[in-house]
Length: 308
Image 1 (cartoon, helix red, strand yellow):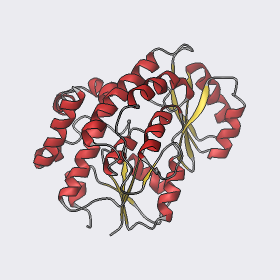
Image 2 (image 1 turned 120 degrees about the horizontal axis):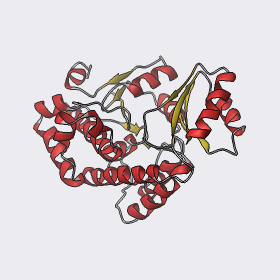
Image 3 (image 1 turned 90 degrees about the vertical axis):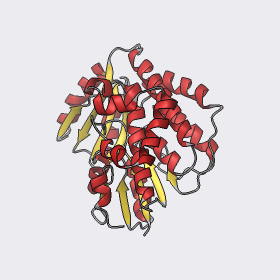
Image 4 (image 1 turned 180 degrees about the vertical axis):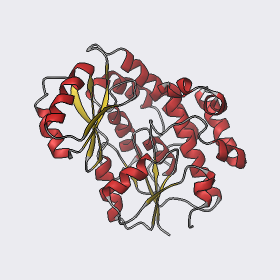
């Protein structure tokens, strides 16, 4: 059976995620132990005994989502289920780089901790005032791009092309207020401010990109052993050097998720799995194609129920 693994990113988290996998598998417990050691975060405490507030801190969230993604990948692997290709949404791209052997798992935990710290610092130090993100439903990519051109003198940018009828924009609060009215007048079904701490995947995060570039310059990125797709380009990553560059550019570039889905559908998979917490990517996949379902595989119950 030809399989593709999709790894979710920030926003998929919830308190208690991964606890069933942790309880049932010694290999998963080793993943948690390694993640805690490498990141300096007590992940058992944050995930299983901490508050929602603790989990929502970007520097904690990014490691927490990554450890549950890789815990689910490990649990699947114990059952002989591995990917033939993979991709990850935003932060989830780091999990896909572990899956494709571009990054060592231990290194990935260090990187996502640093990424979370850098992005949190950049978000709190913006010179243009408070900023954030909003999901726009009911307009396609081209329509949204035309509308954003009308706001080109404001700090607002396309951040995600999530589905054929959903995009995410990032900008200052002032610019987002202008966009809300503009998109509503253009026929958007909804304009939803997101509970995030900054304008991710936009040029407003340039300071984070520059700091991440400095941090990654000496990190070992290896060539992928299987097809793995990049958010920045929507295409396959061809080398370790390219993977490093794309991890840097991803911080200020939109997530081209629909382009990735288009490539994956053309590859003729028998099974597509969302490997990690929640079902956000399963929903986005369904909005792109109904020819093949994307199945959640982030809990022991879901994984044991798969036809493998």
